[in-house]
Image (cartoon, rainbow, N blue to C red):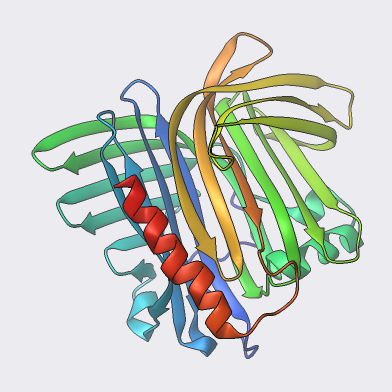
Length: 326
């Protein structure tokens, strides 16, 4: 499988912009073992800041979580072709994908995420101007890919062999998500036969931006229309089911059902507050795989608030939410 030549195969050269950012993010799930994980590293060298998302939910309900958008950045986090923050690290695989290692408390994870198709950039599925408009908030470089995961999870005294699927994205360049009011990011796969990705974002004073694609045996087709309807739990935050469809530009329609909750976590991305949830995926009533729904909201409403207010919302508040889930 050919790599997307636009995607850096190692930590990218740092730009001069204050908002320059590089992030690697992926989720995975193994329905047979009943486990899932959510992992993200972001480096903001010109702000001397880094982010970590690291959440693993095993079949017993044990929840290992470390989430922070306020980690002091150091150049060693991008040394020797490796991205790292605290006990989480990523390296690119030559054929496309990531190697992920976690060493946190008494949890060890050694995982390979191998791309199922060439990583897709937004300008491949919408016009150059639409891609540029979307990338203004997402990053000047961005790719998405479904993948197969395999490896080993050691949780306490247990060793679990992992074999499942997931999805990753890679962002690099100037990035400022402040203007986003809310977003939806969702994707899923059943393997080489079918994967999909959709996203939408609402910016203050502008119409929503939407795009997506379907991958079938390595062939990428843009999505013309999609609808996904989440069913919410009584807390008003947690998703317990999602129903909907995607329709491609060549007229194919795929009915999607997310059920069988695999795991969920609350995370932050600068001003955004996000809920990530992994499910078992059913395509057209029969094909089984995994899917993730991410929904985010900016409590600032797309407008900047003084940093103490941001810290109160995102550091203290999320910390308390994390304790509730432990």
